[in-house]
Image (cartoon, rainbow, N blue to C red; front, side):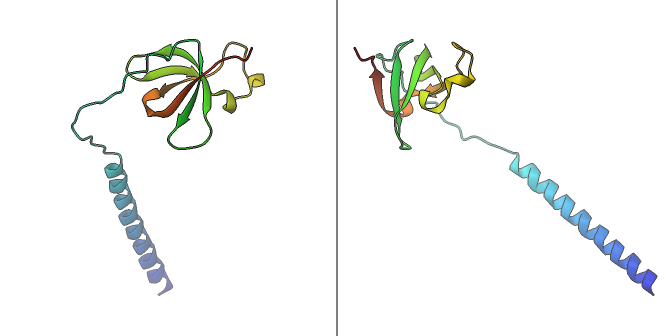
Length: 119
């Protein structure tokens, strides 16, 4: 009698495992499917005053203090290549002249201020 219960319990556990594994595979497959709505791309032009080699303080709509970046490259579609914000990096951890870079979309900034040296 104990043997019959053990076989029945094992069969039920195997059936439950098969059902769970099959349903999770189907769920993962639907999550990985991405479809995009048709439409046009809109980009704001980079402001003319943003120039390579100068430092600017960018304020973003998400709030917080302005972040200072040195512009390395400018594209006319709103994207600029910058060195990572001075406030976010410790120069002691990087080779001089080899700071990390990232692309920013300046059309998303609510304020851009040129940072000039004090004399």
